[in-house]
Image (tube, rainbow, N blue to C red; front, side, top):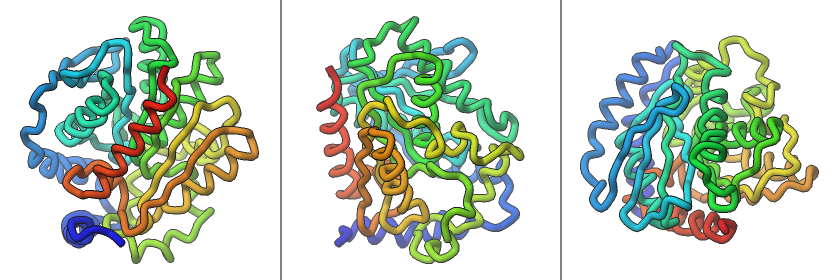
Amino acid sequence: MPSTRAKLFNSVSKVLVRSLWSSDTDAHAMRDRVGKIDRLFIGGMRNCSVEPVLIEGVAAEWIIPKNSTPERVLYYIHGGGFTSFTPRLYRRLCKDIGSRLNARVLLIDYRLAPEHPFPAAPNDCLTVYKWLLQSYGVSPGKLCIAGDSAGANLALVTMLMAKEAGLAMPSSAWLMSPGVDCDWSNENYEAMQDSDPMFTTDALAIMDHYFNGADRKDYRISPINGQLDGLPPVLIEAGGLEIFRNHPERLANVANINSAQVTPKVWAGMGHVFQGFGFIPEAKTARRDACEYLRGHMA
């Protein structure tokens, strides 16, 4: 049974977020709207420093909680439909996760569509991952990767691309509400959208700016089609109300065939990336549990 705060948040989301979508939603207009929402997230960064860094032309930020150590790193890839970035919201989230892991967090600001369609984003994410291993020098056993929504898709894609390039895998991964299969014809999203407090199927159209006509079966777009063997332990979560709620189990089913360690979890009564909103009790619980999972696999 969802908490009172979760129910209230779902109701507010239906008014403020779900109502924004239409079949002709413009990427730049949506970016402006979420930017206005992001400006509401002020404060919450005490006992933490933020240091911008440019990594081979890719922008990023170090989120460094006071209790973190340089040897432990979380690589975080943000969501936003591949078209937007809300840095204030993500700094707060990364600070909390980093504090729980005693790790510094590298938050990437990858190139966004429509200005930079596929494969700009996965290429940027791989560039930064390679830099962490080869230039920053983090031990793979003390590195974990996480992301939400489009960023969770990119986190999984980054691991698959890194494996293909012969790079070491991180110790573990946490994926929040990813679309692991972006061929929208493979599920009946129209039937699932009524329960989703944030999205309708019209919201999926915003990602067309990113796909830009590319083959949706490409594992760099739909990582469920990738070679999943050899991945580190992966925790993949979704809200029980969202249109991506079947993706954790779908990925786990395919991964298990390939002997990959994928743990699916669906949170009843929750919407898309609820973990990002720390005032919801379920979000706090999810963060605690996920960080215990990540800590359990870090050297």
